Image 1 (tube, rainbow, N blue to C red):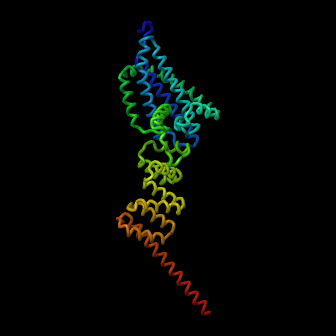
Image 2: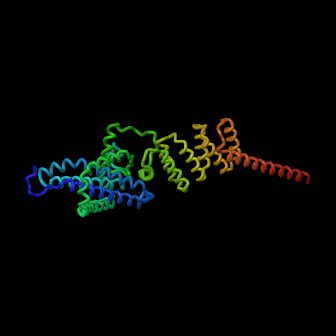
Image 3: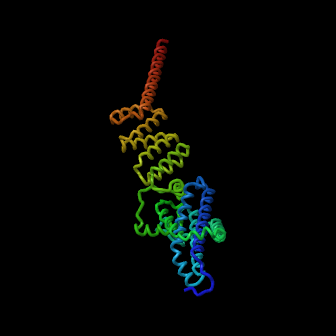
Length: 373
């Protein structure tokens, strides 16, 4: 029981702490994206991935606030402002941990806990100590984050009348946290402390399920992939890869396509896209190999034939196109969608055949004239 004459703090002060905590996390996320953009890892700072990071921080702040409410009330009832000091200390501790985890992520481009077998805080300290400039910037960022935490808390005092109306804020916090559970985040836009905790539990439960047979990517590549694709819907990722290809960002489109196929090896549209991109890059042999594979595994998929007809046309391979037309005729698949390409292939073959015949005629005539002389 609180026997002190000092008035106890209420949930209004607790709410101000949580708002300040969230604001500091948002600033930390901005720091991460600015540095990664400056390093050339990301294409943009204010991207969808960044706003997803803000939402994940909101969920993290919400669950932290919910967990701390009982402790706050218990200690405030025991001694005035004890609960406030305890919760403020916990939140500052979480900010310190999060700042160093972000610093580690920026340095290695891989979050701590990603590889459960090599997980160790000692490894984190060792990695951080190998790059003094990263360590210094992380410490400076930490100082700014702590200052911002205090500053935001003080600023909320000016809006006390709004804070006073936020007693049901705990319900709002719970709702926000539950909502963020349905967002599938990636390491780049997840709260690093939350990611580490979840990964430790999940990977321990699954006994480190092996990902053997899947293509491996560099940390820098994974960071970029996560910045443009944050979900599990590979059809959406395919649309992003297609947009990149149409914008002539071929290398990035191929990288994202490789990632999609590492997750869904039979994603036929992605394979066809890779075939087209290789053709646009001038690698016709690789393109043809990919597209023939698509036809072999999906003989009834007209888009594969369409893409291969294009590649044969671009590479001036008329005999191959003629053979493909015969294959299309034998399969009996509907050809309405590619009638124009079939007509184009036949016309090109006829023109080439005519030119070849003309050359043969000219050659024969030249030989006759030479013999007469």
